[in-house]
Image 1 (cartoon, one colour):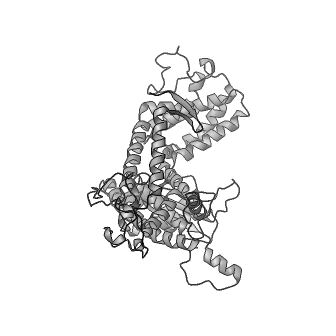
Image 2 (tube, rainbow, N blue to C red; image 1 turned 30 degrees about the vertical axis):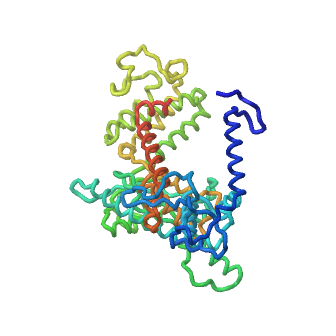
Image 3 (cartoon, rainbow, N blue to C red; image 1 turned 90 degrees about the horizontal axis):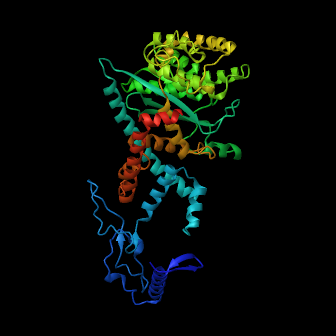
Length: 497
């Protein structure tokens, strides 16, 4: 390796310096040469590139042209060369426009972000009207891809659930595009997803908006709105959106043959009350495990103000024990009752009600507590009485605790929607929000990250994209690896400690 030399742009070897000089000299020669400009008629150009035809005498040398990649139905590359470093790539302008708007929806970009990117790249910016027109074209295709994926996974959900009946259990959860402060929930838009318990895929979704940009502009100017497809589909409060969307989804799914008999959701009683009043009074409500655990943790922190020995470390230990007994008592209400009764005694050294399934002190009373201060049991009797009173309320709901569900898949879906429709931007005045929610549905059902964009390209009559498919495959492999690691015992233990 040559000796390092300090230059204005950093350290380079003498070999790198000579290579850079050679490259610059070659560029200078190419820029100065004009004998490469020849008549267009002597070159072979595809007829569909009509914008390349010109009446000028001198035209660029396109002898080393590389067209956009072309794939057959099996995904084989039919392009003359795969090396993008060779020649100049020519792509249809309308194809670029379609891909630009598709990327805007997928990446959560708006007009300002798109034009900002183009201006930095020294590319002419695009008008708002052009963006709207292209987004509608691409958005309709995205919605159709999402609908097809939901139909496919609805059939699979019904097949996997079939054990002598056609009953289907789903999880539902809503989210809003504007953050609530805890007292004020005034978002103009919201969405809700319905995910099958067995497949973990979206089988239905809805969105609500209380705004329409065209109607608002007409109202401000005092004119009658022009004929348009109004985006406003809700007039109530933001909190009323979730029950309305859930009722709508259950009705629609039942009309298509999916017999929704149980839903998993948060502790909002309004949703299940509306369902039983408007759809079916026999629908079963299953609680979400995370929403059941949060009130216990909050109550323990309230007791912390009353009992000084109830430190954050002790609270974490009690919650860990509670999670263990809920997981071990799934489907066994009687076992959960017994374990909850023991939970108010176990941290204080009383193991008379403990089970050998989880308590190691029964076999060896001399061992120490790993997660309690100084490895010793608690001594605060007043705290023990408070915990006994707290857990007594949950013993009465042992049936509910034994049949907990999870809305974690819905929370993951909401995160995808937030990435495509960020909360600091408003897309609810047009169909843009609907397209972005549909993109999240297609991504959830079809594959990770940009895998669904290949299906959108094919449905739009565009090339699937060699590099689009490569990145989609890479992201899918990465997601599978993360999931495989996350479900291991070692990973779960790391989360606990």
